[in-house]
Length: 338
Ligand SMILES: [Zn+2]
Ligand SMILES: [Zn+2]
Image (cartoon, rainbow, N blue to C red; front, side, top):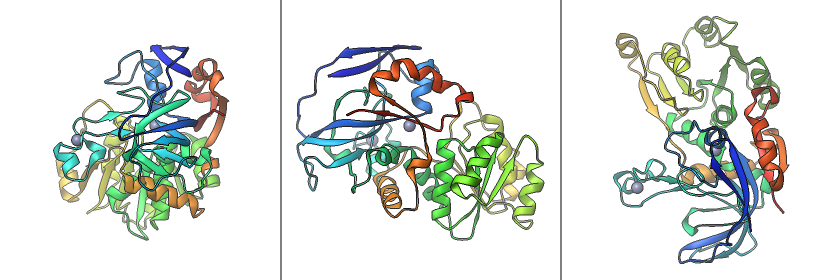
């Protein structure tokens, strides 16, 4: 079967791999769509931490379930996606119902080989029913589940002002699930094109441009002087993350979905006087995946708004580099297989 390997930073190679055989507790997916995200781009560039080469990328997958062992309730031929965070099942996080932050986690397509193949063997326990959604939609479930998880961590309540910093694909998902939770969403970014996208395509009621506006002043106006009671970061930018501590209302929650490598620097009195809560949000759980599928099924999220670029599997090697250039306006690039 055709396989695409990231051999070293900056280079891909197509090879003929072995089609996986069915093993105990595993299922075989015939891959139909692969979503590309920042993790794949960083892996290709050589800037992804804890990454080794050669590696088969791809963790945002949709496919047809062609064979399985011990996948109760699933049917051959069914469209599925899967939870790509392979967890140990034994550590304290796994024992506490938090497999998304398992201390021995292996993300498929990152720490172990992923889905840039025609057939992939995955644990049957990681399968998620496609519920009749299109393969395009199912390839978007994983990145949206990350946003849904961040919103759930924040325990967003109806009517709350939720500030989402960063309007990339993860930030957009956070905005959608905050809206679904009943929040009044405020999008903050430095890119006017992205902010217009939030307004026009996602009907985000408030947008603020950090480059051209006085952010704190605008947030005050929007929230009638209260400031947002929830702030969720999806920038992964150190400066943006540190700044947003000052945008919180007193008593607010701040959830970090984005990740950066540096230190958080915050004035202790500013944090303390707010009695604020700081949380990180990592990956997502089955509950989030199923929430996303049901939101798509209910028409609350339209996956097609996200897909800006589409190529066939055989074109990935040539096209991948162009997705790194912000000038190309990629929100979500999708790879298609028959
Ligand atoms: Zn991803
Ligand atoms: Zn574990």
